[in-house]
Length: 239
Image 1 (cartoon, one colour):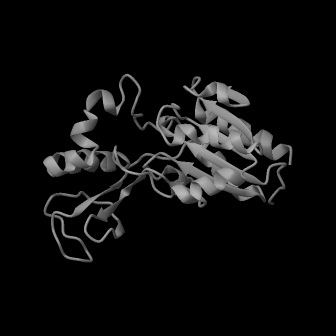
Image 2 (cartoon, one colour):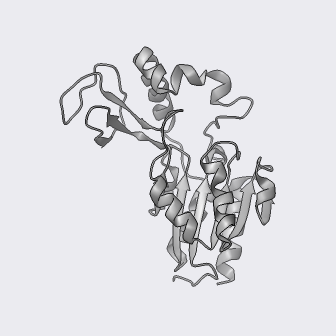
Image 3 (spheres, helix red, strand yellow):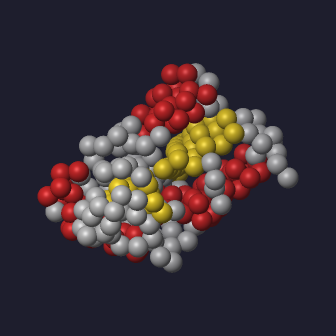
């Protein structure tokens, strides 16, 4: 049964912290991916131009690492919120995994792309792609080789769906930020954009205070798998 929350337009930003409880490595922790790999070697258009085999290999490994990884209670709680709340709910995720989808979320934008998709750099067509990519992979549409890349936003590229995201931020009355470091833009600036409208309550749910924690009206700290289900339960119980 759907319930009428006191909030009718909810935008939820999620970052690596929500997937960490499923066992996926974050980027910026001391033992995270960027501690083991130089960004300039694997996550820029220039790196792909210089050494496509290395870049594709990095993302092939990450795609394979998704096998067997399952959503945790935080992902399931957000899917429950979407299902049970009669308001408009949009999840904007910085994550490139598919754990939100596995949990059942459907109102979802991947602003940094998706690991299980590939894109032709010639036609810009996007394909569901569960397999490895290599420099000789042929585009299913144009037939060219050497043009297939991960459907990932690299450093120096514009995040996806920004028009839709900005429109949702302007209209929302509740903004949740879950599992984010608060130092990756433009996502780190979303709370400031929401505050400027004066319409929305803002909540940070994080393992520890983010760089922008003081901008939020409410802060809740702990593991995402615990604090997110608790928050969703409280939100729905007040409906």
